[in-house]
Length: 353
Image (cartoon, rainbow, N blue to C red):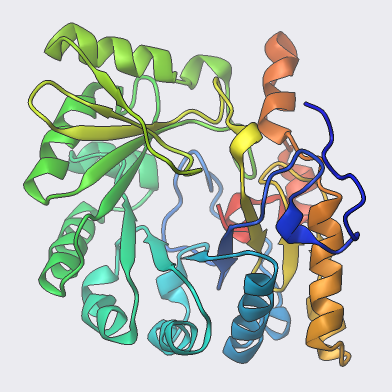
């Protein structure tokens, strides 16, 4: 793709990166801690955690988010780790909802403790919730997540609905031989809660140290399975840069597929991430990011921070998923366990997947 940088100022992120991709969506991580040990993300029991003194305060998170809106961000998704492990998260939500001009403020959670927080989050101004749900079978859920918590997650979804959240999204990472026999059941369950499931291809990113190609169930295979059972599967054309391609079954039910591994969507990626300790990443696969915490705590002004962010975005050339796909037969896990221990920012739970 031809670069479209032209003569725009180096900090003009609104004009897009080197491939013309605007900065519209921000994943804001509030913690690197998680109460599950999912095999596709955190397969080990022990991890190197961010020092607590490095984790951004709520005021700092709100400030950086407000600065990001000056560069074009209109949608913020609060992530982790497991974001509900951050104490008084509803206070941060309320401040973002009140003080930052956003079109959308959402949260991704594993749902384990959602029942305790759903009502407070709704009152605080959270607009949408996505819940990770990899299985409806207790034994499969336990094998995948490392914890016996399926009942908690389902209770959290019920509590979110009772609190007034509608259109709940369910994220399911599909693993061959583990939960790939539950695709239809998950679509059925999503319909009972007026929600929508999004099947995610197993990605070779972050802490997926045990990733192998043969474990990936591709978008093409997922669609073939649904066609074999239901007949026509119609694509839904959305005027959006969202990562999921959506499809409709003959009975009207809808599901999505996020095909980062086999059919990357780098050309339309408008997302950036800020980690819980203030590192700005422009790609989930990026090896390095921009440390904002030190600049902010050393007295940088909003204009100076906006300039730093804008210059990084306008110079962005990331096509990480496409580059990984090009490796083909030589493709393996992005990082080995030893490297992750010395550079925990490579972990997806640190980066804010």
